[in-house]
Image (cartoon, rainbow, N blue to C red; front, side, top):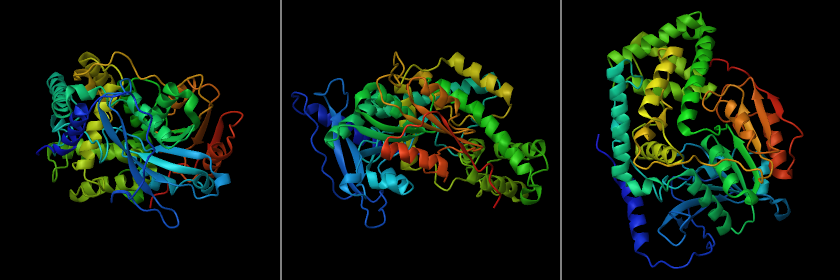
Length: 494
């Protein structure tokens, strides 16, 4: 498939044009002017409304008089009285690579009413993401080829081919985004963008809700601007590791999550017909994957299958669809039930996948090729058929810009933060929340026990979690100790 050059061309053109502007002294942030939003941003129900604007920020915050780029910002004003207002609540949906512009609307709709009344909810597209400054990586080493190559290399020849694809991906990103740009699309620079948004809105503090990668971004903001932190909620926490180490930890957690799914499906043999015990369902699962490896269906092969499984394991409400999809393939060869509802190879997906690698590789040193092969073999010893979809930072082994240090996270000077986690989240294992808490003194961990999904606050419908977080955001109530909330357990099959 042909590459889509437009996103990177837009960003590079902005940077090049900015470089030609007269260079003067660093400027104070100009007030943000809001107007109508693009069509990609949903409208909240009346009387609420959403408004959008953009902010010009330095490409490199360490050199504020240099080239500048634009950040798109959205706002849904607080619905309460002036006396109820607590300030701004920036939100980030995760990634790296997730667009935050529409998230101000979609996430706000799920927040407790007291939070909606208290905060202007502010969404923003992190640098490199969305309509203003999207980045692309061309073909990305064949990532968008359908069907893709088997992402689980078996044997030295396949391992060499896997590494070659990672090298090609790094070369594609350097050629498309430009090697000089790669270093500036980092989490630390985005954290500084957040503070520029705060200043442009005239607010003394930034309150923040970050989910998944958003938790990493929030922890970076706390490290860089501890005295500007208001109330911060980090949900489904990425641990304070390098990205490659996190990806490997996640790959092991996905094995545990898949085993739970296989046992769950086995407990419902009449509903799914995949087998009466976990071993039997696993054999059915492997028949599907091996079949798609030998003969892909309509561009749907092993890489696409693993992506679908990765997505489904992150939310238990998707498990029924995954089990039904396995059965449909086994009984009739159909893959429609396994395909995610949104196409992988679209402009937004290409932007997401490019930004994901670029940010991860800008945030710290990457692995060596030897480390990658060693870890691939270790994971396969744990399970011969792992899910390696989340091993995105392998590309960093061949990155054209090599950071010499990892992103700093957390700070003793920051006020207490609330961390939220699902006890059995396979995407961001709870171990990450426990590790990050050590870098945020006085913080508390709210755990949704007996839960197996990714994304908790204002997502799982748990009154204990939502009430605890709302009390913190609205009234500043920090629990005296960690909080455990009872979860609903595994879902019923529908």
